[in-house]
Image (cartoon, rainbow, N blue to C red; front, side):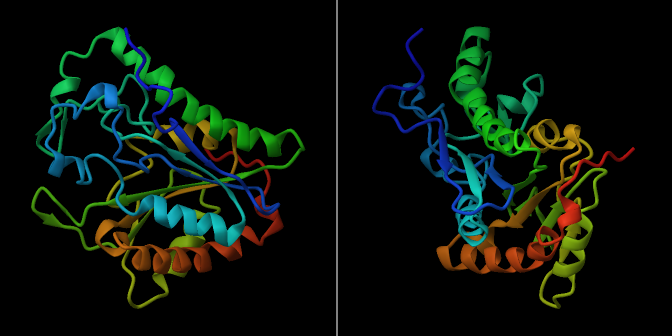
Length: 262
């Protein structure tokens, strides 16, 4: 089987180095709509590949702004979720989606085991190894890190106009999620979803659960509506609002400790 990425292809993972000492790691699981050239267009039209089915529109821009604001390290996926979804367990059908929002991903139909392994080894594992390396850099020093995952959601899904501006996704650990929802909700112009439009409880996302929740490290995932952040100006505005709501939690020294809930 030929390699999935050639030597002149962009890397599987983009890493933005930390510029400060705050033990915060930001991640963006669906940062790019890019496809490996070896896979062509996956049998999907060009217009569809610009839609939310291929990536989280605006999420990478928000994550970059937040990384600059806090001086935090940032890990971003280099390729589309349609190749392999880096926030799914690998036995989840959504890891290699055959249909997304009624669009058939032709190249993923009857995908061979060898092709799955190649995508895992080339894209999935390097991304999660990069996250683990940043987090373990703190833990080796006896420092408990914080993990924040940035996503975005389409404003209309299956005919339903979603009213939320931002969703805060969490399972059992309330340390960041609850005060973040309260501070964002204090704004009259913001509608906050508590585990909406998606939930961190069922189904559970891979990244937050595997890298932080199981270790008792503080964490949260954010979903921001795409029509609010699909421009650089909008992404910067929302990053500023999120940073203002998140900063008080990150300034609390009691946050940075292992806590297990339930």
